[in-house]
Image 1 (spheres, rainbow, N blue to C red):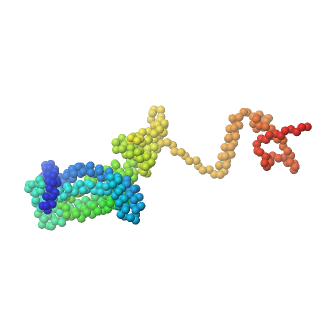
Image 2 (cartoon, rainbow, N blue to C red):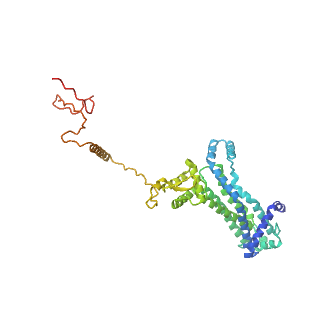
Image 3 (cartoon, one colour):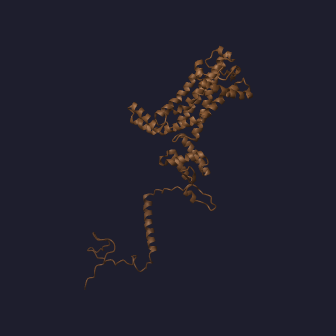
Length: 429
């Protein structure tokens, strides 16, 4: 143990120094030997570490988004080389190299926390064994051994025997109950964090190695916490429970305000953004303008939720601009009252004509023909009652010939041209 502690001494000393500084502050409020002073010191250490890791978290988000944008290409490679796993892996690695993405980037925050975790573990283990470590001297060691969190000593473990626990001033029942509850809460928070990512912020219908990796982590990490948690001191459990809660809250904030394109979280976000922009007539926040700018820049490559957002703005008489701003569209600007205020923002919908029956269509067609004839008549000159209804420039019709049967020919014969005919030349008498 001394060898391992010496290997982590470069990080153990700074971690112990930070804990002591926070303990000095909280000790003045709650008392130096209380569990509140030492427990809050560990919580404050977690918060300080996570604030320092925010740049890594941002990098993790960007890498995750890049992996998600590559999912269509990854799907094509998977289908093309479905019978050749080796070639499939080679093409995947080639795609990662060309786009500069790394599927292991999602583990960066966990890997960055590992040195602090081991350092804190050795500090608390030294408290349990009665050894000074880092800047923790004998007086601080005695104070830490007296600290209890809900009846469990800070350095006690789930597997500790009754003799060890009694030496720390507690009972086995209290230690095991407190550690079991903390292990369950720690595993549940980790599972919920990963499940929230899988169900709201990614497209689970696409089967890619990245998605399979995320699904595996959703079950592996909580199981690891449950298995290894029984060997962790109470102080380390406080550390991991705090960092899991921080990760869960941080991810909830990102999913709500900067969701992955095409996810359910984006659909909910754009629905809220549509309601907010239509109520105020503009995008007031910088983050909103950034999202709108990215949607406008996509053009025809917008997904279903982004097209619905643009259509919602258009129906409200608004138009999204390339710089992320939202202005009134031309249709909205044309509908103004005398005092300058806008009336209804939405343009009236085009009504489809009702389908008519055959008799209605025939009667409507006859009425239309009659109306057209009436219109033509009204546009021409007045017609004398003594003349026929033919135009003035019409030629006289040919004389009606009698048929052998005594009838008259009222219709044109076969082969005769319809319409006004040229009169035959009169015969010479």
